[in-house]
Image (cartoon, rainbow, N blue to C red; front, side, top):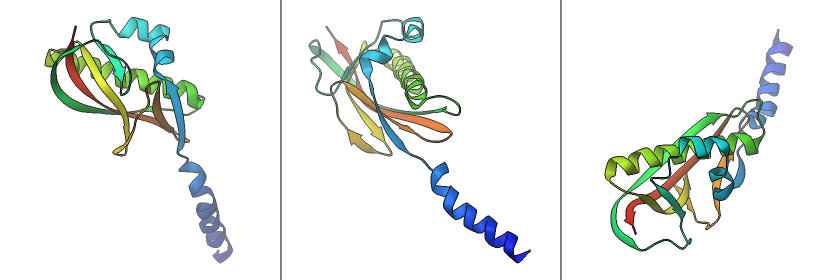
Amino acid sequence: MKALITFVLATTVVMGPAYARDTVVNIRLADVLDMPEAKAKLDGSVKFFLAGQTTPKVVKKISEDVSNLKTNGFGKSDEVSCKWVALSTLMSLQKSAKEAGANAVVDITSYYKKNETKSDTTIECHAGAIMSGVALKGTYATVE
């Protein structure tokens, strides 16, 4: 019995980090927006601009917000699960932007675990053994 308990504890210590995988995957925003699902679910009334991207003239900044979503990554490649959760996060930002009266989300940065990462082309996703997550911070705005 003592040998079994020792084996279980040793296995837990060795296998624990494998289940706690946190792989950073950078997904191009353009690739997410080009997905057929994005074309069906994002209606075009809200435009998305990463920090550093050229934007139309900002007429009014309304408010800043964060959307932090996770998705089931089990049995999917990191790229597939990350694109899916990135799309879900953009859908959430679109809904909130419309409610705020905005037609754009500008200065979008990755904000996973409150660590801000700026890129003018990519969104940061964290892929684990079971879940993938994307957190985006941006400013709702009215643009020309």
